Amino acid sequence: MVSLPARAINPQRAAMVRTEPLDFTRATMVSRLESEHFDVVIIGGGITGSYAALDAARRGLNVALIEKDDFASGTSSKSSKMVHGGLRYIEQGNLGLVRHSLLERQRLRRNASHLVHRLPFLFPVLSQDGVFDPRLAAGFEALLWTYDLAGGWREGILHQKLSAAEVLAHCPTFKQDRLKYGLMYFDARVDDARLTLTVARTAAHLGAVVANHATVTELRRNHGRVAGVEVDLGDRSLSVRARSVVMATGSWLRDWNGALPDADVPPIRPAKGVHIAVPWQKIRNDCTVTIPVPGRSRRATITRWGDYALLGTTDDDYTGDLDAVYCTAEERDFLIDGTRTALNTDLDADDVVGAIGGTRPLIAAPGGKTVDAKRNHEIRVDRDGLVTVVGGKLTTARHMGAQTIDAVQRVLDVRGRSQTAKQYLLGAAGYDAESTTATGGLEAHLGERFGNEAHFVSDIIESDPRLAEPLITGLPYTAGEAVYAIRHEMAGTVADVLERRTRSRLFARDASLQAAAQIARILVIEGAASEAQAAEQVRQYSDSVATEVAALNSDINQEAYV
Image (cartoon, rainbow, N blue to C red; front, side, top):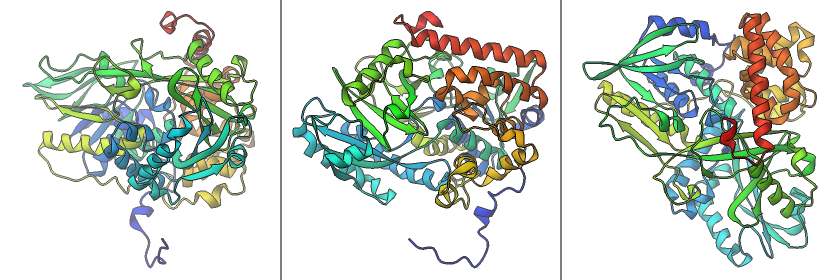
């Protein structure tokens, strides 16, 4: 579609382009938490809670978002990083979820164009031991047609049938002896932690109060109605007043008992998923490749991410500590064995440079396979006015947030409609991904992370050329990005910077230990931590990495390490 020349400035776009960095500091936010009376407090700074805060702010409600750790520190930084409709949901007969997910995918492609990028998915068809029997390939192609018609067409390209040679051009390490042809369709990918942070920052840009490292310890009630929350800030506590409260804590709802005794709390069944990062040269794929895993009906995926490839994911019940989910040796070997079966590669355990483990908050009773559980979400309103949202998936988080605030408005007895379907996120308004990334370099790297706000980061680098140096050799993240994260993205700890503002731990776990001391020094220089606090953060980060390595290299059940 060709747009006509603009005769006037687009006010919606102009309102989302800043001339100076957003005042997104914890001190400012905590001050507002103390002094203001909110229409709604949202507990949980993952993608769902962040989008709910954005939706509430866009409607003009006075909203506070409170996260006990860091934005996206739970499930929302440990997802598959795919923005998709989900072929598997068609197989489950859940066409409605697929149709809506594909609509939300395209909204994210527009509203977060600097973060959400098209991603081809390749299914090789093998003569035997493939993802599916070759006799079923025609049926699978019919499924792809259904996917396209359900909304895949919005990407502007339909699925394709590829020759064996074309498959090898996309992934030359595929074993050729059983390769017949391939099927390719198109979805999208995103750095999930950066998307969540950007949603939270956009909410703050629109007036929301947003605070991390603030633990809600208790719900306050007055005359049988929720009236706010008690918050532990680490060094002190405070009472936050609110007319309504939203629980958006995902899997952590499993362990929460603050609802009224007669509340109909949905069954929360966390399902564990893991990914391991390996050098891309071991795979050499230019798209997401789906591979069969011997002896398992569950398929695995391999996605290129810069100079690394992400292999995932298992999908099993998890009953352990939700704050300490790690990939185990068994899960690592499961992914490596599947890769070696499908590809000509000498990949082994020593090639794993990082790993993540997380849980999906499924709404399902015990019994049956988690992979067969539906990914629908549920919103509940208790008689005391507490609103709870749980379930769903990253792709549909905007819609979940909108429906959550619909429920909040019923509690508050006010009217209003969601206005986030076309709401640009900070960095996206007017951003041209193709022109920014075409020639590569620092501007392309910053553009894919910050969009039209990249110049705020390059301003910092320009002020001190030493900040152009990489935090870790072989990764693109610069010291200037760490400074920006601490000044303007509410990064308050070593882990905030290395795990979520950058993905250094995932792609270079061992090397990130060396960078931890540098991040600690920057935190001190920027006044975000004392010398003692910074030293303690380095110790905690080192201990966490050691625990990850111990779990990853032992066949003993993970719960022995937590």
